Image (cartoon, rainbow, N blue to C red; front, side, top):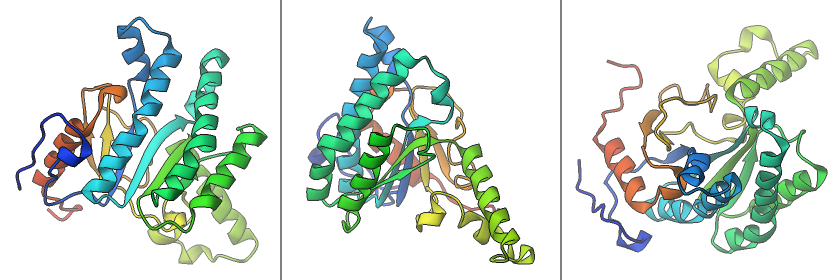
Length: 251
């Protein structure tokens, strides 16, 4: 494993390992507990987490990561109290309204994956607009998983595949792993499976995230709450990834 300088600092201070994952997925957990530890409202934790997206995305781009997928809002999150959902929707509106132009100028391509049907019409419009404005960018591809769940993704893929089979567009005997994956949100958009999935907050589970796609993804569980996960912590995750032999089931 190559050495990495992992002191606290800015993106420009970091020296990354030789082997950096091409596609990083992050379960951004711990906003609520971060706020509770500081005796702040839950909404303050979510806002601190939202502010942390840019520096982590910048660090990934600087390290050479091509794709970054962030688990922002799950299908299960709709079950939370409305008083907690409303601030999350406000943060999403702010991001899609104010940050998209900056993303375009920095060469970032934004994609939204997930079930958009339950979001308000204005949010769906902002999602479409953000994707349209950044679709020609060739830098980091930033995927925001919103209204997303791994089970939902597999179910919608099976449903659409069944519809195509019923309409005569797909022969059942032609269905294999690649065909099925083409109906999923990531592979269906031509995106590779994640090489590394990071979960912040200390819990060791994947919480219904990219269930099909992370079959051979390396998992890394960071103890830090998401608002505290910075360049130093990202460097530790990348160094750990660099040290792992990837076998993809071959021994």
